[in-house]
Amino acid sequence: MEIGIINARTYLSTAAKGSGNMTDIGKNYTIDFLNIAPYIRYVQEFSGLDDYKVPLRIIYDHEIIFVKEGMCLYQIEDKEYILKKNDIHIMKPNVKHSCFVPKGERFEYYAVHFDFIYMGEELDFSADEIYLSKYDYYHSEFIPVEEELISRRKMTYAEVEFPYVTAITNAMVYLDLFKELLHAYTHKNYGYHMEMRAILLQILTLIVRENVIDQGIQRQHPQRAKVMQAIQYMHNHYHRQIDQSEIATAVFISPSYLRLLFKQVTGKTPVEMLTHIRMDMAKKLLLEGNHSVSEISFMVGFQDIHYFSNLFKKLEGLSPKHYVTTLKKDI
Image (cartoon, rainbow, N blue to C red; front, side):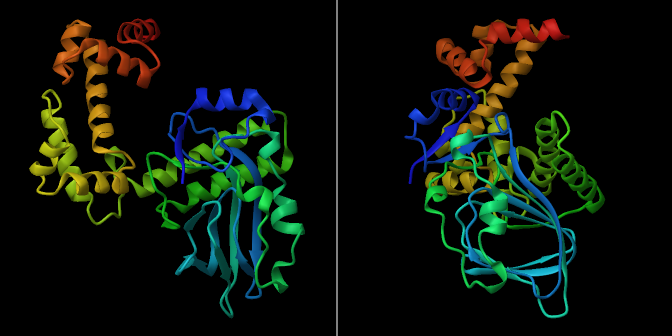
C-alpha cells in the first residue's frame, strides 16, 4: 500500500495537470491541519424508525454523523458499535459496514459527506445518485461496489486518528453547527461552498479536541502516559544531540516500540515530534531578537546552521530571517 503526504503545493500541482495525471489515483495520503480544505458533497437531516437499515456497503468519501435522538447498531468490519444520542460517528472510505435500528427504537441524525480537499471534477461524484437513489437499501442484503470510485485518492489526518464513535461533551454546539451546515447546503447562497467549508472546519476542530490532548496525544489511548513522558524528555533535552534510542531508554521501552507508540498515539514519529518542539522554540527565540540564526540553531539542537535553515524553510515556508521580518511587519 502506498502512503504519501499531501500539501497545498502538491495538490495544486496535481490539479493543474488535470485528467492527464492519473498516477496518484488509488494512493493513500495523509493531510495535516495546515492543508485541510474540506469539500462538502452532501448534507442531510434524517429521521427513521425501527425499519431503518443500511445493508453491507462501503462509501467512497468521509462521512460524519451526529446523532440527535435514538440509537443505531453498527457493524464495522468485524466489530459492533452502538451509536446513541449525542454521539459522533466518522466513517472512512472503503470500510465495510452496515447498521440497523433495534425494535421499538428510532434514529435521528445529521450527516455530511465530504473529502478533505477538492480533488477536481473528474474524481467527484453525486452522493444522491450513489448513496440514495441508485439502490434499494431497505430490500438489499448488500450494495455492490462502484469500481470507478473505489480507486479514488484516500486521505486521512496526519495528526490524529479518529475513532468510529465519539461521545461528545457539548451537544448544543454541534447541533447549532449542523443546522448552519444544512442551511448553507440547502439554500446555496452565493459563496456557500466557503460557508460550508468554514462550518465543517469548526466541527472537525471540535471532534479533534474531543479525542486528543496536548501534542496530539489520543485521549483514550492506554499508553498515552508513556508517550507524554517521552515528549517531556524531549522538551527537557531538545538543545542536546538526542536520538530515539536515548529517549526510549529514558522511558524504559525499546526504540522500535517507541516509534510504534508515537505513530499510534500522536500520528507522528519521535523524530517528527522532536523536530516540532525544536522549531517551536526556534520561532520563539527568533521573535525575541536576542540571538543570531546561527546561535539559535545551536541552542535548539542543530549543529549545522545550513541544515537548520533548510529544514526551517521546508516546514515553515520561509527562511528564519524572512520569518522574523514577515511577522514583525504584522505586529
